Figure 1 (cartoon, rainbow, N blue to C red):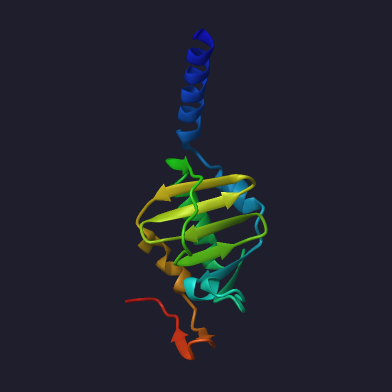
Figure 2: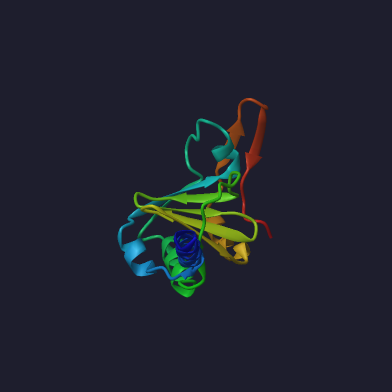
Length: 149
């Protein structure tokens, strides 16, 4: 009986530790990146992603804005083990990915999946200088992705 009580207590403590809010080191994450590729959910929904909407290099103002957003949002991340549908936007880098949904973002790096609930309109800057046309061949529709006014 004592063993089961100890095991239950340990499991409860582990659950609390796992679900605790995390703080990220935004500068360390961004120091490992040189370029992000920006994809929309139309591309992600297809098996063949094709060309990204944009390539965002480290000398691009949007790259700096991603770093600024991460620095301003270091705290309050939650470990997350859920799987989600395709994000609205996805930034993929060589070290980390940032998936942007309506109302929250998921940050993935190493073995971490962290979620933060936030106003994702803060990422509208990613559409700056994006005037790419993405064609969905299966449905024969063409979507022009532009920043919403």
